[in-house]
Image 1 (tube, rainbow, N blue to C red):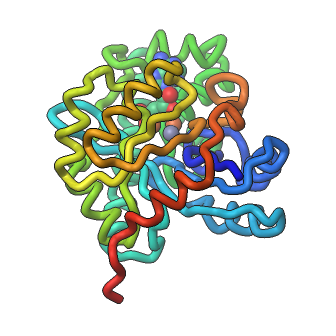
Image 2: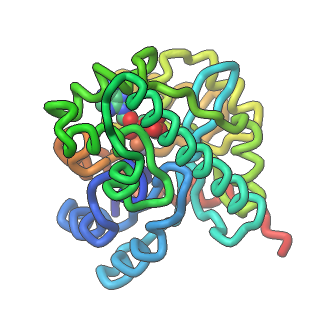
Length: 274
Ligand code: AMP
Ligand code: FE
Ligand code: FE
Ligand code: ZN
């Protein structure tokens, strides 16, 4: 039995519907999947149903956008109670920040003579957790850029004219919210931060796991993070971080986590007092 604990749908920056994602997971021979859209649970109910009809195990999750010492860190939360008040409020706030940020990006584009309308971004996004990829798609759809990459290179990349920083919660707060909602907290794709010294610092805030296996980690990197996980007593986890066709070919199936790892992670759930 194998799992993929890092997947996105069109409810954040992926392109698959939950149904399409579940179908592909089954085709890849996965028997358990987690949905980890950015700052939202919007797709979890649909994904749960699509997994149930395929007799696949489903783990509700979300990927929280946090920061530590100026670095953006993504923290994955699993087995979250989606009706937990503080977590729901924090996610709603994160999504308001995303929506306001899109309006600001469009205003900056408009000031440079790119007449993109903010409504056209939201029509393309059709979700509660929009981001730069939706602005990029709107720029292409409206003929302002030739392709997705050009939109990032010309306008949306950090330092480019329409780039707007995103207000983020502290990593410590993200971990507290996840634990408060009965879940476990895992640091996503440590290989993408290029600063290993951050790992023990986040671990000290109560982290439960480390995403050792990820599509962007080489075999050597995975081995390296596995050692760090052992040293810091973190449960090693893995996921493909598939975004459908948003960035590349679909990555689902690239990482297959033995199910025993999922059970070891699940065993770290905080004791439920209610
Ligand atoms: P946001 O959360 O709105 O800042 O958007 C982040 C998303 O944009 C992630 O899915 C990234 O993979 C994607 N992204 C960031 N930089 C680039 C880039 N240079 N080219 C293409 N996609 C990018
Ligand atoms: Fe993403
Ligand atoms: Fe991420
Ligand atoms: Zn992700």
